[in-house]
Image (cartoon, rainbow over all chains, first blue to last red):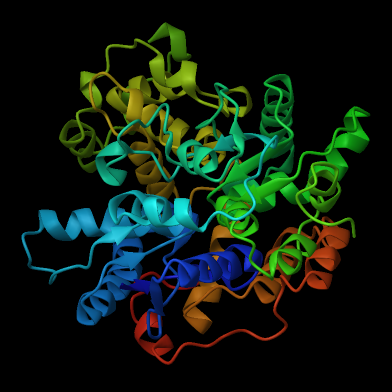
Amino acid sequence: MKASYYPGCALHGTALEYDESTRAITKLLDLELVELPDWNCCGASSAHVTDDTLALNLAKRNLKIAAAQGMDLIVPCAACYSRLKAAERTMAENGGRDGTSARVISPLEFFFLSGLTERLQGLVKHPLTGLRVVCYYGCLLVRPPDVTGARHHEHPDEMDRLMAIIGAEPVPWSYKTDCCGGSLVLTRTDIVTRLTTKLFEKAIEAGAEAMVVACPLCHSNLDSRQEKIFRQTGNHHPLPIFYFTELIGLAVGHNNVNTWFRRHFVDPRKLLAAKGLVSGS
Amino acid sequence: MSRIGGDQPSGTTPDFSAWAEQNKVQDCFQCQKCSAGCPVVFAMDYKPNQVMQMVSLGMKERLLACKTIWVCASCYTCSTRCPNQINIAGVMDWLRQTALREGVVPAEKEVPFFHAAFLESIRSHGRVHELSMLARYKMKTHRYFQDMKLGWKMFARGKLRILPSNIKGRKEVAGLFTRPGP
């Protein structure tokens, strides 16, 4: 199986481990990812705020390249996914005047649409038994549902189902799609702190030991500022934040997990060692 | 009008009210579902349902100068839950775009500076280069030392690239920008 791959700027930088783990597990699952040639930034949260036409055209350039490649376009970053999906929809509404588009799809969707989940089941070597996680989907993977096509935009369950397949224990909670404030991270850090603090509290209250995400902005927001938040609140209860692809990599016994985990701010290896899921480091 | 302060709808311009009508803003019956679900409503000066009312009333000057439009995190909870299918987050986008186009001094200065720095990076390289984007943002806002430690830790983890990755089609990408740079 082959598909086009749009990493986006974050996966080439702040979310390197999401890129590395996505490429690693898809390879094991016999899915060949072909990086979209000469892709450009999707415009993220800045273009649509300032100029609709620019937002559409930045996304459209990528979709045209993808159409020429003739394969589904896998987009792991939730913000890129949202912008490319929105452009895909506008292009369809314009009835082909803008040219055709490739199907834009998130890795989570791809798992369920292409039968990769069955293949994954057969590859699990070290089930993550006893690891209690909350799955956090954030905003842009699911909203607005007329753009994303999310089946359950208030209660998505794809990551929960994947976590169950690899033997972890997805814990129910009510904050799966509450916003973490990602787009305000540099400008109104005070707002972001308030939103993420609530997510940590609710995750811990639900009995989770870690959070699982599918968005580089959520990840860096939740992972990199915990220490500061705990200094302010005095309530030190570190909560490792995983990309779902990293935990899949761990369960299938990928060799590079420690490289990915070393890139985290909240080092997850202590928790994983206590669970017997990695050897102590 | 008393609930939102009672100024005159003198700011109504034809494009403003035409746009409001086209986007069904008048369908709002003030159920306040948008404001109940908004994660950042605590930091806003006008709640999303008030913004809908103000748009209907054509209170343009107040809207373009308010905090709400810049504090909105574009999470789409409001648009998703609106029983009248008003794209409330889209209305926020449009208000921000109008404010920038008309040169209104923003109530939250940092936010448009951030967007400008971000877009400038795309215009120069075709992709975002965090380091130069952050430098540009800090020069504009004079927040030189905010998050310095965090930046260093990112760098140590291989998450900040020293050099930008310039794409081949960056001229083509720069050509997509119709508005002049900041």
